[in-house]
Image (cartoon, rainbow, N blue to C red; front, side, top):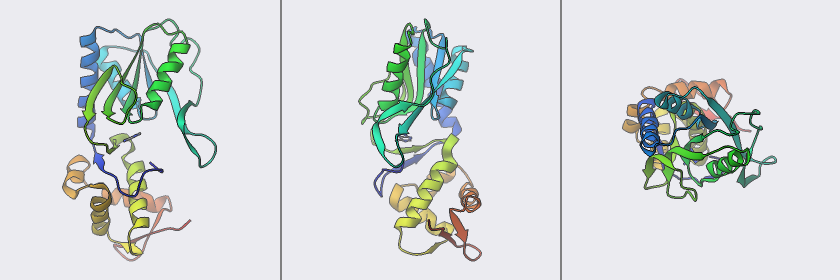
Length: 232
Ligand code: ADE
């Protein structure tokens, strides 16, 4: 999320919605008559989906591939890298379904497809819960296509993403200290996160995130209901 512009649209999702997308991807796989032997879930975003899709398809062979986007220290390269090699025998000779949460540039899933194919898998297919129009790679199975680019906040990294978003808006906004209500207003202004939508998707979570930010020394409480960023 670090190299995004100051203002971009975010969509907050919840478990029910995402579980529905897992079901849709699984239904597409069944309809295609592709019968994978193993699911490869890309870490970290594809884990929940990979596990649920195994359940929908009746598979007990689930393995993981850790993709990394960062090389060196601060430099972000377009090329996703594989962090750890896959265990011996995990895909060789098998029909493989590679799963990730979202195809944005499509780079991760494309690289994973290439890697698994090079490991002498038999048939290799790919699936993502969501597909953005920016993707240069077309997965075989897609839960939903998004017309408009957005940063999707998934339930499994709700706290991590909200900490990034809240720190970002506090840094960009005028002023030193902010009430929770002011933080909500900034989330709407910079990221189109409306209060009602956030409360429907993830009810009563803002205070939990603020307290966790304090625990991680990202913000300080300044008075009863005012928060300020910790510099550095
Ligand atoms: N990872 C890469 N692109 C993303 C996006 N648009 N939303 C959520 N996670 C992502």
